[in-house]
Image (tube, rainbow, N blue to C red; front, side):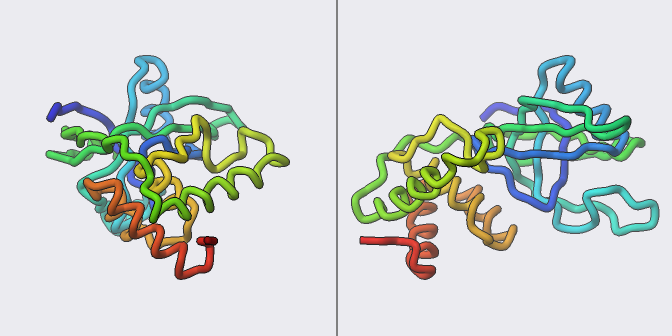
Length: 206
């Protein structure tokens, strides 16, 4: 396992590998972070916020977050107005937080250990319904501008981990459940769990 140093962005959402994350950035600590990431071609880490608020409040609860998350790389930025930056990010590897310290400006810096990525596993026949349902969702996006798609190519509808991760993003699951799914080591088990959820909601067709 390799260890890296990276800034953290605690959010009330869970980013998955290959996932798309749009952000509106206006706090100075994160504007500075994004600027450095762009200048030095560096990623940052997205972790699930478990206490406190995404926007720093002088007398609010202290920020607490899950000790694991996903690396995010900035793919696009747009300055919407002075002091407001729209950022599009793509999910990379998962990581666990070894240590984390908050700087004076409020930015968290962490030493993180990378988690091995999912092994590519072909979707078994008994779980094919989940892949087929996702294919139908993706096919319905043909009238939507590509930059607004919630799932971005390349599409890997034959891969257990990729299909499971996309359903984790699309389904209205509680964030804690999404985070548990994120950190499951076995992509087949992750897809089995999502297949059951889809079946319960009548989204699996024979």
